[in-house]
Image 1 (cartoon, rainbow, N blue to C red):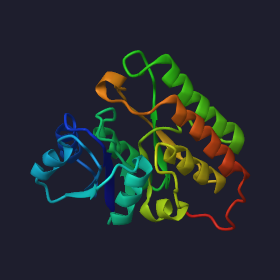
Image 2 (cartoon, rainbow, N blue to C red):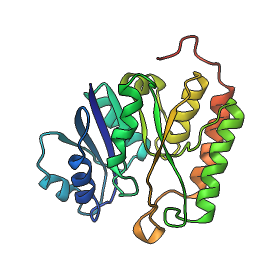
Image 3 (cartoon, rainbow, N blue to C red):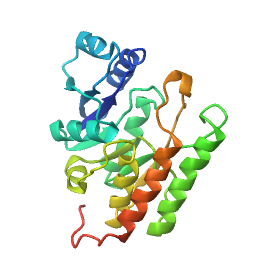
Image 4 (cartoon, rainbow, N blue to C red):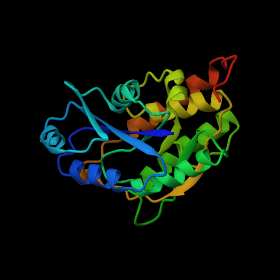
Length: 234
């Protein structure tokens, strides 16, 4: 089994070197590749990526910023692994948790695994950020009669072929809701494992806003009203 770690990057000059170092330093239980998509960064991100030297690393560049969903699509289109997981470059997530996401897959308990964040005083960006995340997650649970704990988590591990079959169209942060909505519509319920998390603030470059939460609710409603595919991916 080969795991493709997909890292969308936009204006992360101060963090990208550490993000690469941390991701490549993990003792993974399988072969990995790290596919980084520089989504039109305007700072020194490209120069930092150009100095990176690791055979497991591949860098793809968007000439213009197209959004997280578009960057992930490019990464998925170029992924060579059987499985994939998304890892943001903002250091909010710890790549040391990725082997925990792989465990249920390697022992045959699951096909799709989400990392479930437990928010606390040291890990929450703000009260409203946490409430917004919980509100979107609750909406998905109500609409699809499911019970997942963290829809907006970055850590979504699944077969590359499954992700490609979802045909994700959202170009921005709405891709998180679209992925989950399409999985739940196919009656594929993610297996969840607890992960560590440390949110950064606006002054540190956090990009998601309340508008993304509204978009997520609209996407979930749209996916709920669509006809379920006649076949499901396993």
